[in-house]
Image 1 (cartoon, rainbow, N blue to C red):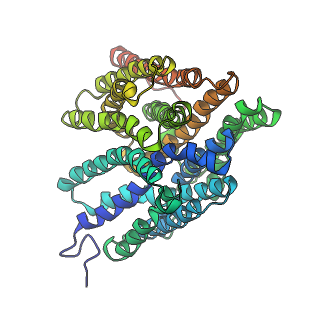
Image 2 (image 1 turned 60 degrees about the vertical axis):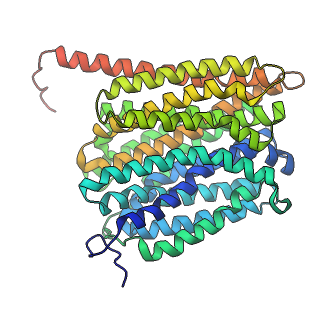
Length: 485
C-alpha cells in the first residue's frame, strides 16, 4: 500500500507537494492569463467595459470572500478533501468558461472558478506545514515562492501563445480549457499521494460571521466597480454606506464569540494587534495596485496600439522576470533588515510606476513593446524586494496560536485589495477613455496609473509611521497599567 500519511515509513512529502503546488499554479496563472485575453473576449462576445472588468473582478471577489471560511472548513472537514473538491470545482468552472456563450455565463463561471480557488488555496500551505519536518520546511516554502513567480511569468506568455495559435479556431477559449487535463491529473494523483490529515469535526462553524464577511466584501467591491461608469447612482452610495455597519457587525460578532470561548472566523486578538493591522493595510494597498494595472495595460497594448496577445504577453514579461531576480537577491538576507528592504522595494516600485506613467502617457511613434522593458523591469524588481519581508513582517506580529488564522486573513484581505484595485483602476481607465474623442488610450493609461502612485506612496507613509511608533515606544518610560483593564 502506498504510504499516504506523514508518519508512515516511506512517505514522500515532495511528491504530494508537487501536486499541491500544481493545483496552486493553476490558480496563479489563471489570474494573469486572462488579462491578455480581455480584448479578444470583448470583441468576440461584444462585451461592455463593465463586463470586461467583471471577468477579472468576479474571480477575485469570489476568491477573496471564500478564503477565510474555506480555511476553517478545511480544519473541520479535512484539508485533503477540501483541496480536491476545490480542484474539481475549479476544473468544472474552467470548462464552463471555455464554452461560455455570452458574457453573463462567462462572468458567473469565473465566480465559480474563484470559489474553487478559495477552496483549494488555503489548504496548500496548511498541508505543507504539517507534512514537512522543520529542517525541510524552509526549502518547501521557498519552492512555493518559485512556483508563484513562475505563475506570474507563465500566464501572459501562455495566454498570448494560445490565443495567437487560435487552436481549432477557438480564439481565446483554450486559456480556460487548458486547465481540464491538468485538473483531472491533480485530482486522480492527489487521491493517492496527498496525505489525509486529521481534522477537528467538533469545530463549530461561524455561519453568521461568514455571511457578514462576504456581504461586507460585496457591499464595498460592487459599487466601486459599477459606480464610476454609471455616474455614481444612489444605490452605489447606499451600498458603500451599508458596508460600514456590516463590517462593524462582523467585528462585534467575533468579539461575542471570543467572550464565549468559541472559535472565531477572524480572531479578536488579531483585530487588536496594531502591527498586524498596519501590515494587512500594506498588503491590501500593495496587491490592489498590480492586478488592475495589468488589466488596463493589456487593453492599452492590444486595443490601443494593435499588439497581438502574444506580443502583449512578451511586453509584460520584464515585470515577473524582475520579481524572480530580486526574489533571489532578497532571499539571501533571510530575516535581516526587513523594514529597510520593504522601504527600498516600495520606493523602487513608486519610481517605476512614475516612469511607466510617463512612458505610456507619451508613447513613441511607432509604438513598440520595447518601450515598456525598463519601467516594468524596475517595478518587478521592486516588488520582488518587497513581497518576502512584507509577508514575514505581517506574520511575525501574529501570536503562534493564531498563525493559521493570521495567514488566512492576510490572504483574504490581499484578494479584497486586488478586487478593489481592479475596480478602481479600470474605472479610472474607462471613464477617461470614454471622455476622450476617438479614444485616447495614452491619456486613459496615464489617468489610471495615478492610483498605483498613490498606493505605493501610502505604503511608504505607513512604514514611516510604524518606525516612528516603535521609536516612541522604545524611548518612552514604562507606564503603570490603567486600572480596570
